[in-house]
Length: 180
Image (cartoon, rainbow, N blue to C red):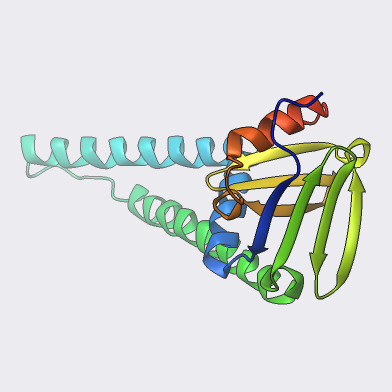
């Protein structure tokens, strides 16, 4: 017998472009490859910054000395690449949002013991709990993954009282859906 109140509803869930970008940018930043590349980029910028500081320090101590300024273009390129990389990912996410019109239409979610019922202009769909691979909690959003590359975006602020986000996570736990 579930301890959470059933059914749990989330009504009129829509996602703005800014919310979509914020949620997916955060997920992108948590990917192992993204974290590795970001770490390498930050270490490179740090080392170039230290080199810049040492060059200035050497010149201040000995104004007549030759200072190697060759690292400055590399430093500037590293900073420019860090900015461009972030901008490019956000731009691609905005383009993806613009193409995904389903995200822009209101969706009603009904979470029951046998599964999830989604209702929108596109129709009514039922997803059995066994079909859900996992869920990811990002800020006010819970992303439910029936497939690796597709998910339902559930705005936890749209849950109908008395249900709470904890109630929904308890239900997922009872249905053996891992929440990350």
